Length: 118
Image 1 (cartoon, rainbow, N blue to C red):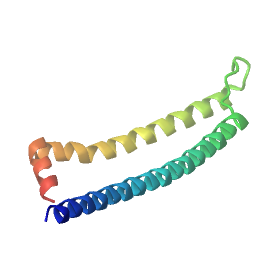
Image 2 (cartoon, one colour):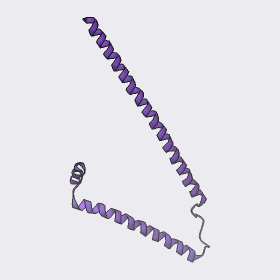
Image 3 (cartoon, helix red, strand yellow):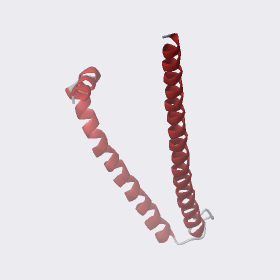
Image 4 (spheres, rainbow, N blue to C red):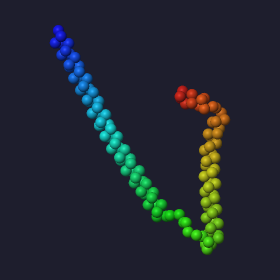
């Protein structure tokens, strides 16, 4: 009788170790696949950064003195920069308006509870 008990315990231990080894192997395979995907994403990101750097070097911003340039050209450039800044400011204000409305309608706790419910 003790022989059967020890045999069943040994078989159970071998099965458990086989299951554990299989889980470890699957985890290692998943890790390797994840590392490969991370490497591909990092390569794509490095490529995009390289393209952006090349584009920035191809058209660098003008940093020379403008003392003798045509004032009309300088005014036009200044006005274009101001218009772009005002447009960005308007976009920020429109985006912030919704946030401000939610702040005035409810408290943080109410929003958090509603988020957890939904």
